[in-house]
Each structure stands twice: as structure tokens, then as C-alpha cells.
Image (cartoon, rainbow, N blue to C red; front, side):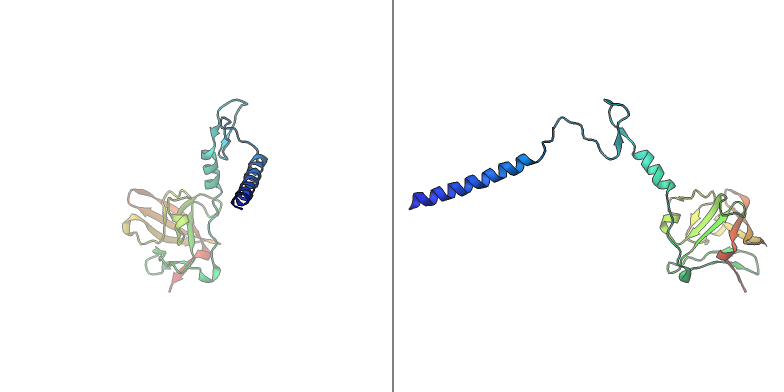
Length: 180
């Protein structure tokens, strides 16, 4: 009786091992000495070593930056004080704003300064604005913006600050309101 149980257990063990061997044998063998091609490498020639392309991909990602959408219902504007023509952007995390000062009255011209509630717009100055990227305009003498004239769809302002030459910048009218 004990011998029959032993034979059944050995037969069951044999079948399990046989199934395991067949299952492992069905998968393709991977050679250890074969070079592995990673997603961030390319071969320039047939037998040349792989070249890293991560830097090119990072550059493409930076160029393909698309800023977060502005919620029109929670939109905040810059305020121009009528008494002294100063331009203010107040930091408000509950509002959406991306207020850009351009080199010319054209949104495709160079961005000179940026005020935004979005960290991705401000940290590291991704738009490379020469006057910087900020959450608000409370920078004292470090950055001063004064309204100078109204144009058709832009306002003209003078920007200056410590260690920076004075320049003219243009803001879209839709992002500006006058304090009354």
C-alpha cells in the first residue's frame, strides 16, 4: 500500500516536472552575449557601439512644452493703478493667469517677462524671458513695470529693474484691467 502511494506521488512529480520543462522550452532562448538595444540608443553603423540619444529626446521634449490650459471662469488679470501707472500681478493660487510681456505688439514675438500661477511656466524660466518668470509682480525695485500707452489689442509698458536695462514690453489687453 505504501509503495503504491509512493509510485503515485513520483508519477505526479514526474508529470509536473515534464510540464515545467516543456513550458520553459517553449520560450525563445535569450543569448547572454547578445547586446541589448535600449529605447534611448541607436546604432549608427552595423557593428558600431550604441549611441545615446537621450539628449536629443530631452531637447525635443523641451521644444514640445505645452503650457497648462487657462480656466476662463477662474481667470485673473494684471491691474494697472491709474494714480501712478504701476503694473501689478497679484499671486492667487485659486485663479488662473499667464500674463506675458512681449518684445513687440505681436504674440509670436519674443517673450520678455512672464507672470503665471503655474509652476511649470515659472520654475527654470522655460520660455527664457530675459526679465524672468514670476508668480507675481511683488519684487520691489528688482522689477518695475509702468503703463505707458494703450494700443489696439495691446498695452505698452516700460520694464526696468536692478542690473537690467529699461525696455518696452507689450501685454495683451485681455490680460490687463485698470484700477478705478
